[in-house]
Length: 611
Image (cartoon, rainbow, N blue to C red; front, side, top):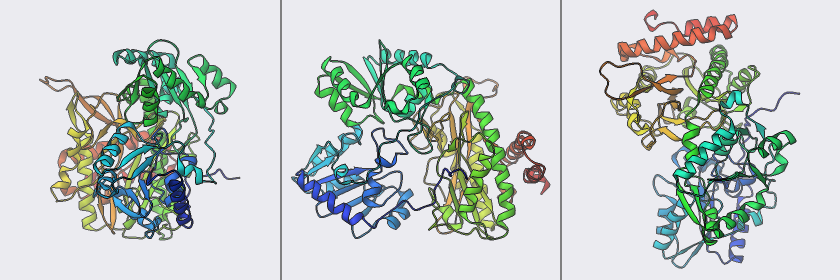
């Protein structure tokens, strides 16, 4: 029997019953004396991927995007999405039931302030919103002359009679040969941070932080190997892990019991209240801690201290073992991607290849490594105009044949025990137009500007973001996403706190892994993105330097389509960078390839001057 694929192409959206569901929710709100209710796409941990049991927004509205919220009132209902999902939302959601608002034009809070009737009581589930979010919502309600009211249990759950059970993915130990640091050493570092923060305990609400701190991995959500759980780390004494015991076999339980007290999830709220009653000061992660947690602690008499989770920065700075693993993972993954690219060039010329065919083939090449644990996210594989949709997800309905004269954008990643990968390549099918070559080369110039940047220690991602945009700005064009995001070590492919974007305020530290992915998107025509992962490293010595300098090491190894490059637009230094990168790709990957793929790679990476 063939292995199940990590990505489904079925359209998970179902709008056939959304009218009945909306009516049932309104009836439940009336029964509870609520004027309306907010339905976010969120779980108790603010995870990017949530289990089926937490997909309330999709069940209610039909919208399956990874970010969004809905407000349901007695006579109106509105879905709020960002620009990535504009086309998807209009395709999936019944416009007779829901208005659709782009948060770039009007935020949820602005809509509340402008549209919520005076005297209304707007309900929300305090387990699904952060404290900061609730403060913004409360302010907006007050401005409208309305009241924001916490509601527990969630009224939507009362009508969701087919709600899936909570996940029970098995927890596994993340071996020290991959983690590089024992869990007890990590916990000691965390306790030291608790003391610096003048807190009695740290509440860990982010399952990624728990996975890193305890050297465990899980299987509760798609594509990110985490176990849904909470943890408390006191300044003194043993930590407590709140997790469903059915996820643990005897060996894993035994290992965890050496580190922490094991508690079932139903003990969590009681223990929080006890900490509050003892007048303890509890540090909460402002990015992921639910409003309900602060309420329980403070109403019992304790103090909630909000701020960044100190574990996030520890986790973002990879140790030598993790860095070595990342290099090995990228070499392995680069060989798989290169075999795919060689296959794609041959097969796409026939004109019968589809987007789904390409996605399935790429996963198969990665499976052949015998090390693939999962894909890092659903593969973005857009042909022609679909490539211009930044977060396009191919379904059997949207699936498109890849035609000559088009560009094909494929953004994919893999989860290996020694590292997480994320790579985007844009390739020509047949002969590209002069405009395609010009636009691609400008994106490449921006990519090289990031790859070759030398910057003082303490530089933030916001300070580097414009490096990738200058070649595009010179032509009066730009891209509407960040230039790069942090990447975990066999954890989330989107890892905070560092990023290369206009909003990236965290200093880039040696050992961080980030993406470098400028792009250009011509609506209705094509998309271009070139993405490699980079590691922050010490810069080569600079004569007379007065500051500590950092640079990037490119980890990703795969050819960049030379057919899309206009050499006249590259400087001599940029062309030299590309040739050196391709020489490095060739040296690293040829030993891992069969003769046919090696010959293809040799041609694909020849120096530009040989054209």
